[in-house]
Amino acid sequence: MEFLSALFTAAFDSNIVFAQLVGMVAVLLAAYRPQDAVRFGALLWAAVSVAGLIGWPVYAGFFAPWGVGYLAPVAYAAVSSIVIFVAGAVACSGRDAAERGRILVLCTLLAVNAAVLGVPLGNAAAAEAATLASAVGTSVGAGLGAFIAVVLFATVRQRIDERLVPPALRGLPISLVTASLMCMAFTCVAGIAGGLFA
Image (cartoon, rainbow, N blue to C red):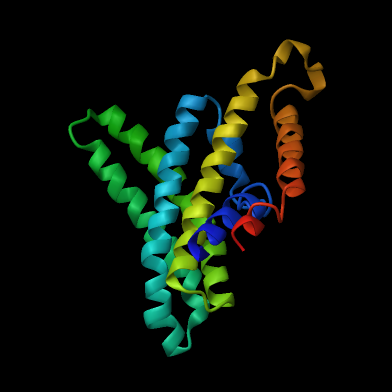
């Protein structure tokens, strides 16, 4: 129950992208086509989840007993970046040079965003003495929330008919308006999802 409560709270109540506005750059830059957004979001979800699986034991086993709990964000950011680059290295095997370059650029963007998303997880771990179940639930939920945010934003962005948007709002301005409306929608449901399993 503790895992499910932490998962739904992190994914919906305190969505790391829309409720806390962390990683919004990734949503604006990478969410153009839903197909690409699903791949980007899935890899981001995996990196943040693995960062929680490995980062919390590192924090609880090494940083907290030594009194350097403030280094928890470093552990989460480093682990998530390593996961991204290892996945990128596996994806680059057997590809030509141009494709490898494109994959490594995408891995760099993903690693920066995974590190950005890992910082609030590290801060949350340092702020409260959570159990492994709640820490893993929070990290998997944060990854799920980022995945949902990227995919939803890409889907909404694709459905916006640019011909009906006034010329002054085309491009980035309508994207920012859409993002702000989606942030308000996620804020409206805050407190509902986590309370289901309390």
